[in-house]
Length: 361
Image (cartoon, rainbow, N blue to C red; front, side, top):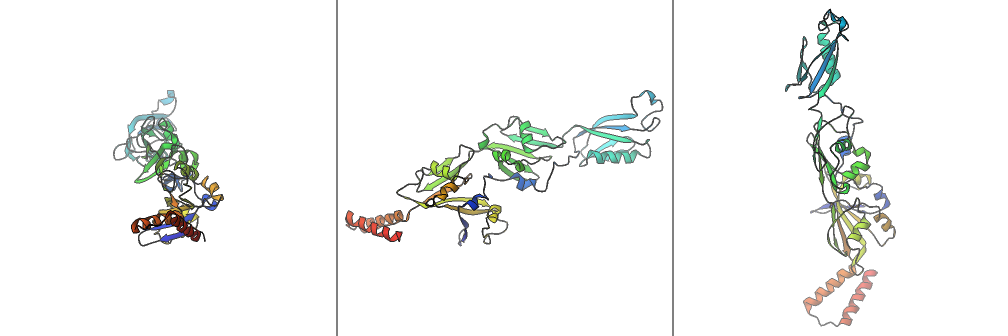
């Protein structure tokens, strides 16, 4: 592995080995876990918000108190249920004899405790139970290519991303062409749907006001150089390995390609390169995507096994270099054309073979 820097461009070059495969996978364009999931062991604590409707029941230990009259013996219990009310724009609810109580941003337990405190000097050992009857604040918005886009309430036990997508009717397209973007308080991350399914740590809990955007995008890579075909090639399957990519591009041209120099270009996650112990001193700490060239040497039979485990990512660039002899032949052809030398075919062949023997030394 080495880092190469010029005045124009900086990049790292890495030979493909088993040690490299131990670090790399197929993470897709991003990660929910890296962006949102660290440090959270469970679902977010849900609080009451503006627009929520709550039901409040107040209990007293005996009749004759603030809410229960003396003749309450025929009642099934010493309690009264107040009319349901909606948390106002300032975040308050109104409780008789307790006044305005702040509800916005607080848990049901905290609201109950404040109401009990305010009523304790007037009611007989008051107890309060609050429940949310209509939820407007603890919701997730799901848009894009799902069965039923819209807003969904978050269950009190917590919902993960796949739970929400399932309740939204599931994805509308093939999983290998589907991506999911999560937006939360100004932060955004996108993940490949099948990685969301296959990697449990990516299936994080959603939070109130999250937005999930589901869309279809056909992944592709570009190939050029001494391969059978050049251009952009669509994945059209769940995974494409380096061996698959070389095959899709028509393989290596026997008469032209240098099998020792099959290169793949991508922007690699800095964290992956650090795990490989690549020297990144030439790059500022805030550079999280590092230009990287992976090199496979197909002259070494072990490289074929590595190529069958190395994942190609969306927008990767595959380049098969020309052999040195091919470049020399191009040069001699160019010189012949320029000088107009009347060299015979035999002398050209002899010159080329001599140069080839020199390059093989």
